[in-house]
Figure 1 (cartoon, rainbow, N blue to C red):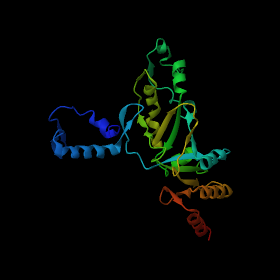
Figure 2: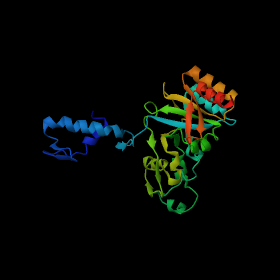
Figure 3: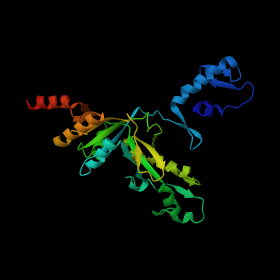
Figure 4: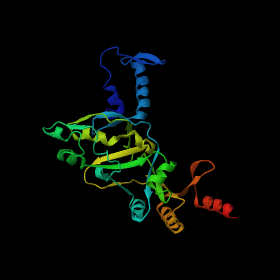
Length: 287
């Protein structure tokens, strides 16, 4: 218990006799009143559903209502081997900061404490120290929604690609939600942990992505998935039938569900069907 979020929250309660803790419209009680201590612990456990203790940073952080599942959109194009790598090798590529598609990822209002760092302020160039520190990080980006047709258009080549579905209870348990801001705050960096925070801030123009991330430090280019992390593969309806059949067979062989994603213009939304259900729809249209 002492290593969990409940204990970390309890550290912030003043340890003196008759500490009064007020809960709005609920109850007022003393921590040092033995019969009522279980109620405080229950209250702490309730809030710990939304909090997590980050051992590396040594502080309690918000889970921000982490969804049960997250999604990764991928285009097929000429790089179908990337999809097969996820399905067969059960791993996800961790991009370097320079590989991310937002040109502001590595910049922001960042200021360093070393002498001469101010020369780079208000320019497009990064100092050597800044670039070196950022080069240590790798990032996995995931989306909150599978039925966002803008994401299907931008990242899955207008339904000529796929969308992977992952549960967040396994290797993705430490995923964090992106913070979208109109203007990023000034950040004064004295350590790697401080610099990492810029990887979780993006301009509000990217809000439609509803992105969640995991950042790591090191040269390991892949995040290995655990059994059951990959739940389903949604394939866009514009993917060529022969490729779709191959992907379906692979999914069935590795124990992953398979669905076809298509736009229903009459309901103005993206829908998902099994192969049999989708073929029935096509037969009804053609028949």
